[in-house]
Length: 229
Ligand SMILES: *Cc1c(COP(=O)(O)O)cnc(C)c1O
Image (cartoon, rainbow, N blue to C red; front, side, top):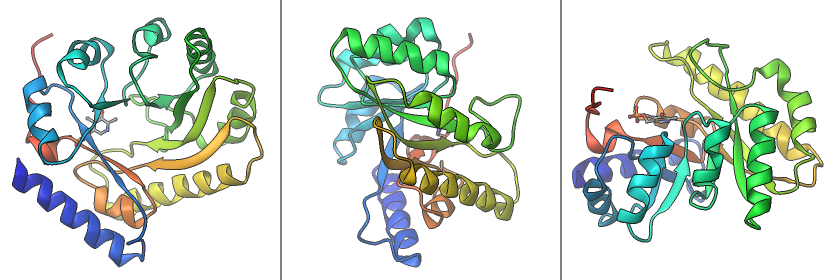
């Protein structure tokens, strides 16, 4: 595992240099879904401490078992489950509806928290993916700006799998342009700073196109073994 992490960290540095971003910070988010708490504790020994989970149940099970960790929620979030994680996570990546934003806002307010979130973009209008469409972007930004207990920190995208890298690069570019547009919007609950793009297969490309949070699971732990549901 140590070699995998070192290799990824080196590749991140090299990708940053290629595009003159060596002074910028990039978060390596450890995507820990399906991994045991002990595995996460092992990863902490190599200096990585922010974990991405995509299932509420799994997050609340691991949460008490891994000390001093930071938790990010990267999966599709159901409204009725917001209350279970609102006090546990530092960033929610996957806001894609006003109903969800409203519920997060309400739960954050009830515990006196300002909840940082990213908005997910469904860049290729895939049925299987969550996220708002590019056409909805402007109206969505305006509508979400009324919620006082959420802080909008930026965007997250998952491009289609098995596409040509030129096509993937273009999806990243379009998302980065939206991210830059967000920085110019003058809404009170906007603090635009995170652009999360890139997973094991495409994180170097994503960094070249401006990502500052890469989400990596397989590259650190190897192929995931899913339990039978
Ligand atoms: C699983 C997952 C990842 C990590 O994917 P790998 O290919 O294993 O690196 C990244 N982002 C999201 C939203 C995920 O669900």
